[in-house]
Image (cartoon, rainbow, N blue to C red; front, side, top):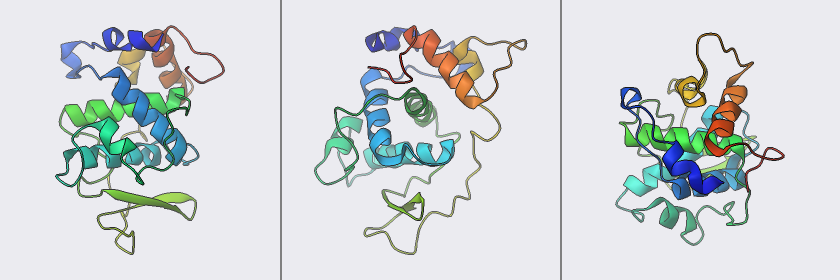
Length: 186
């Protein structure tokens, strides 16, 4: 079922969105499940995905998403056996799409390559070990105003009014994957 994503994610050119590699979105979602599934906001979860992509763009790390995530002693929450949670998969897809199309909606500056958990949220830094120079969350939250292009992904129009961003994300995932069981994709 998940393998059908590549074809389903070819979005109209007018939305200026490119197709996202299924395996990239899945591995980021699995990493996010282990690193930030309890984070209180979509923006904070998206920051973990941006940190991964910052490393892909950095000369200090490998050049692929999979190599960055599976590099020894790095994203310790990642396990290949982690589930693909629908919300995290949607966030991973959204962040990869933003990254591929020019970083609009970036929630973490590209120089931030590190993070640690602490005080109920992840703390992101430009240096290791993470110290006092943590990200101040001053970027605009692209998720606060709604789901942006999720309405288009989900096939919604002006007459559809999902209750919240998660309803939009779930509608998108149902349309893309043909459904999911128990809130987690296999």
